[in-house]
Image (tube, rainbow, N blue to C red):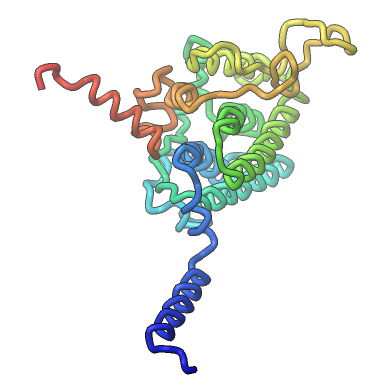
Length: 317
């Protein structure tokens, strides 16, 4: 018996829906099943990835995301003050590799969640000089210039990526989806590698005095780490290259600290709130500044900025 017209119609509709599903990009399917909490945490991490990508791209090549892969910037404003650094033939290729790794991270995140456009970033000499001055509790003269040479650039690199690394460690146990956990594990692996390279290069030069200040590299890292702990308001989650002598089981008394970790040598973790306090340089998650003059993007960062506006709203309104 020939199928009825209604049966034929249903079959045609089913076939059409199936074909449409095949045409939907895999990334769109992935986005649709990412839980809200996971999406917001991944979105938040984009702020740090944009910061690292632009710093490494400009530092190594003198051009940023708008030149390398403009669609990933999403039309966001270009960074303030970013420039090519005076790097040696050894350091420049390393930073260039970091740069392309960060571009890959942005691509991977925005393939999993909608993301947002690049926020306004301040990567100027003045911005880094403020961080260093705050770390030492006094202005250095001349102002610290991250783009001046290898040592300065590596010290500036010490300031940025590690914060994002601790953010991924903090986010990992909160993620619900296997898709996002796998992505964060991959991101964390490479971010940890970058931090290890930066710390190793600086550790080799720990006793070197940074010109013209006469301050050792180790001292710079110690001051920067203590500043981040202070701004984060969450205890010790950061350590410089040289720490007070302590006893490590099986190894005796050591002071070297090429990799930072807690008493069990596990990576420290930070919350989005702690990270914003640090990268804003204000010690307050709702007061933008520092590397993010107008604050970060995404639900989490924007939520704190909205809270600030509500707190400052006239009581009679």
